[in-house]
Image 1 (tube, rainbow, N blue to C red):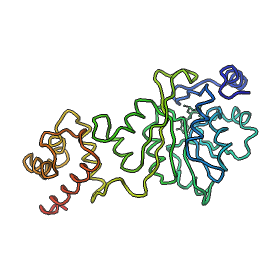
Image 2 (image 1 turned 120 degrees about the horizontal axis):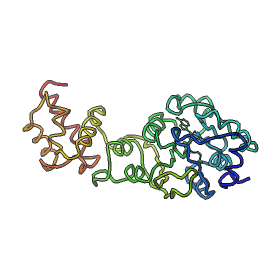
Image 3 (image 1 turned 90 degrees about the vertical axis):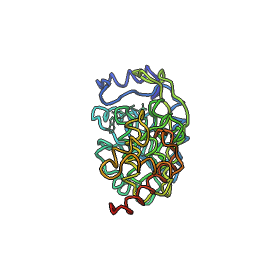
Length: 292
Ligand code: SAM
């Protein structure tokens, strides 16, 4: 039985009366090299635990089970449980739990299932929850590394150097908290049913401390979001939406130039360091005016 063999996949799923759900992002892998490579590069070894999101039929689960000490897979679709009972029959170190990754307390799950073990996260993510799932995995603080397959375009954005114009507010959030690496491409013909777009695998390794030091993290992300919500506007105009009631355009222009930036610069051109400098200068200005 090959868990990536199209004929075997169809036979097993038909035996269990399973139908793919588009709304649950169910595109299963049909090329064995993909789950093998994901499992090889996700960082696990025989002492580690892994949380997998969305095992599907279990092709990645089996590869993780060969390399890690213990695997816990979270699957939302009850209809896959009888399938997984069959396909994971030989994997004694795997437990499949029913649940929605977005509603799961991942930190508590890891403490309960893995104790003191180092734990990794790994997934061929359902596309409809890419950003919230990555945020939930990262924010949990429970994982030594997070290796996920996402749409190629999203992977490129997440890993793009901040300030090149290819990044987004989400890339900045990720690169503030983690080292983001683009591992490899996975063409769309590696799945059943075939999605419309290609995919790629990325690895996020949480940093011990944020990439830049900011006095006020909430303000830092407020400025970042404002800058990317209005990509066409200059940074000064975007910042007016954050500081409009406190500072006028002239003061904001002074703030931007004080940070060594062109008064007409757009937010997408700023590096993480520029955003940190801007946030810290804004904090100082607010203090000077009695706003903080
Ligand atoms: N890992 C399998 C593979 O690579 O062939 C399946 C990947 S498929 C893209 C996504 C899987 O995530 C499906 O099994 C789907 O049922 C499951 N899933 C969808 N939404 C989920 C959620 N919110 N929480 C947990 N699992 C979810």
